[in-house]
Length: 220
Image 1 (cartoon, rainbow, N blue to C red):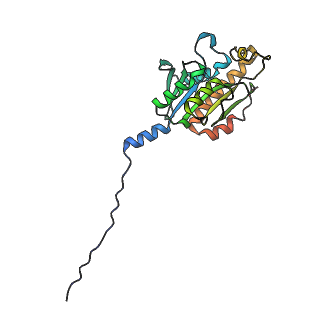
Image 2 (cartoon, one colour; image 1 turned 60 degrees about the vertical axis):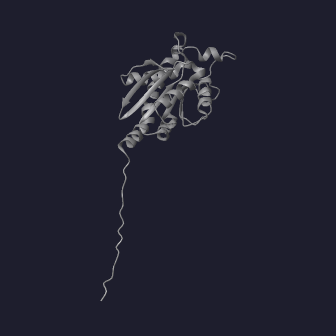
Image 3 (cartoon, one colour; image 1 turned 60 degrees about the horizontal axis):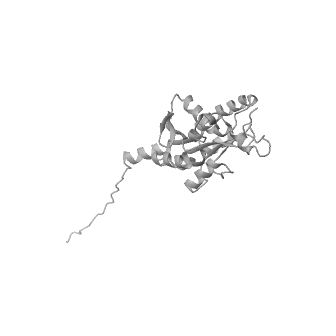
């Protein structure tokens, strides 16, 4: 009697886990944000309507006990909060070249475009409104125009801070480069404080949920 030769095949599964380096990079990228406040450098522009982006990002940095230092193309501050890192910049390129600073710091810090938030003044919105969007045109704003030109897209989050348009015909430049009226100060400060909270919310619960709250706010 001849014994049968049987070959038994077994399947072996090899599981390859991502390296710690890859996981660390992914986690860091997801929890890292670039906050850009638009404005112009120089004392003559300090606290003007056109510089409200600077004022909001400054308030955010101060809220978290951080500070700015002069670096390439911008004043830069790093905030760490709830496991997240915020690279906050105020471009020193002047408004019309904001895109250069935006792209440099986004690339340098390896931050996804969806994890950026640009704070900007908006003539089309009344003073009692702010508007958060994940995309949108430059609406004639030179800072946004340069960012869009530099990035090649308008698909990036923006927090638009309404400044109103109560100015005589032909006086738009004087209006946007002017300082807030005494009777506007209280509502402007309320909006700055809420904008700081919106930045925090954007980084924790995300754009969509934050939009639902921010875009329904009315300030009196």
